[in-house]
Image 1 (tube, one colour):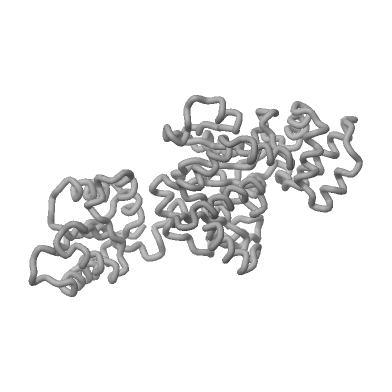
Image 2 (cartoon, helix red, strand yellow):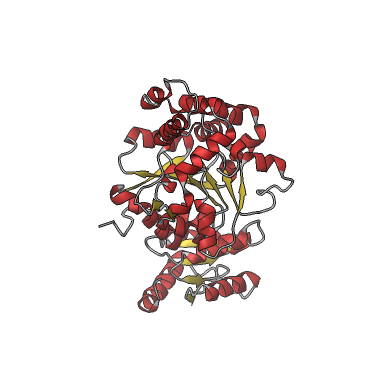
Length: 404
């Protein structure tokens, strides 16, 4: 029986960034391999895909070097892919790949179905198929813009600058034969001869939190960009995440990826056809953090505001500074924090625009509200009294708080 629950831990930062609309999904071949055909088969992994292309080309009487299959067997996949791309025309290659993929026979996987329910800023994928865009249509969501590199450089509208939701197929799309990337020279051309392509990838990785799924850690152009970012922005507090089967990487590999590439590993049980991938996505979509902490507001500019912030941290609660509400992205941040909150605790005793916004959002999201005024302007009030007051209010309210 498949494991119906994800048995790992979801980083709170990843969940918060997703709710802020600042998270990008990177989907590798493993995600497409979750889709199952009517005959029970799945899409081939990269090495098997190259072998099938080679065999079908030979069956059609096309001329190929005799040592390509041996190269594939020895793991020289980039080199073998480039040989295939050199000896087959774009139309021949696309025709063969279309026969292999047979997209109309593929049923969307549970992982594909949950993805449109989440607030991704964009989706990057090395996959050539159209399963992701099919998932959006099937779930009644708006179909995202689908871009290859050729589309990106040929369009006047920049999806990042204009806030578009989009899927970027970084290795090409089956529907565009000239966009397919299979081998060493294709990768080299993308990375070293197309600064626009590199700029787009670096902009995404430098601006947003990226979650890698179905990614084996060996994709050359993505590794190149991660390494470039690590060397250029070592002092940045960036953090990306990769969902990997347990024990796929050694402790040293996990540690070096986190230290050198800011890439944190989230592990899962890969039995039962990687069923926990969809379980992870489902839980991430609903995640409120393990403790569902209270969200407590305060004003950093108010007298002794820092003392109240320290009290909030001592109570292991989440804090929201109402003085940041004029900063860029404040509304998304407030909403994201409230989506993960057990209860909203209003401490300022004010009825300004900030408190009204928090009340309105809490009502919309069905988050209970507690009023516990901690007047930082009064000298006789201390941090210990604030802590006791908030703790007592939470203790009294918790039996009636509707956990989600």
